Length: 472
Image 1 (cartoon, rainbow, N blue to C red):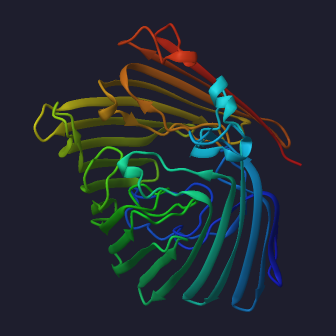
Image 2 (cartoon, rainbow, N blue to C red):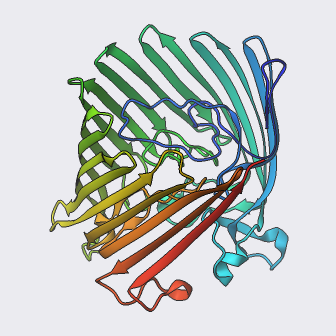
Image 3 (cartoon, rainbow, N blue to C red):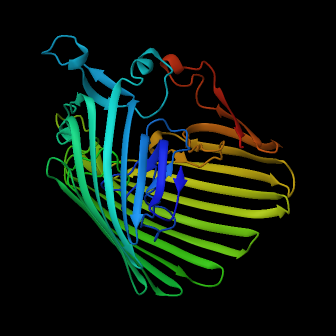
């Protein structure tokens, strides 16, 4: 990767990511949607960046360059690589490689079984695109075009909600995006068109109305037939920008020197069917978080989130119909410094899910983190002990865990039991760093974990991660 300031402003060869606009036309790599930072809606990108993560699918392999003069930049990129996927043979054809069709793509990166190994790198994906951008002071306007082709044809599934899924072996997306600052308001958005003619749009504004008050508004409209293969946009399903129309309102206010209140409300309509609702449905999401940071050594927050979504209810009748399911989530988190070298983090979280005509299910997670870092020491340590009781996946609780460099872990605490994990980082010598991570699940509600080839005939399972980095 090379970055310059004159004619050639960026050049990358190998594995890289290309990210443009608000992620509606094209965005390779990960991105984030709704978060506790309720007014951080606008995406800011470097457009091209080297790929350094461990994910095996969300990147490009080839070359890209950004050329610029004054306030105008042109970025061109190309990629060709093999990816994982499921191939099938149509019933009305003979068994030849050319007539295989793609039923789905695989993004886990796992090849543990014969079927997973059979899906490994069986599809050729070729991508070419360009972005032309004008930027001057508080205004930025860009136009993006991306062409993607596969060596096999996609065939959508036969279920009704899959009626508008991408089919064929090539797609073209064209889009335009903008960002504009007017006084204390930042306007941004993007409009995009897929090859089938469907048009998707997202627009938003973040404004600072007072030194202690900021507001954000975002509207998105993604038709059910909009087809983009690599996106990451602000949405309920941020990597599938389709079948969603929503309005998001948020505010963040500083109540006092140490206190901050963040709230948002998101109203979403799914105009077409979804995988768990056999009719158009709605989703409502309300969020409130109160933060307290009295000094540099202590930080606390209390969070409450209420959600309502519509999903099929199995009544035993020939036709399923959607009903409302209500979710409540409460979290209390505390981070505090017990010693100059020791930081503690404590969390209690409770989840509840209730159908409108049924009984509620609830669960909880309680954990304690201990982090040891000493100035000047080559060794740092982090450990967690957690207790959880979540009777079903409907109330499973997800919690971030520190992992080795370039990796991340957000496991689901589901069932009843405990979990421990510990990680050490050691700067062995100049330029060489070593990470070692150990984790263990211990379940009280089962004697067999998983099934099939991944079955473990015990109530506990363990994992070890090791990584060495050599910098020169």
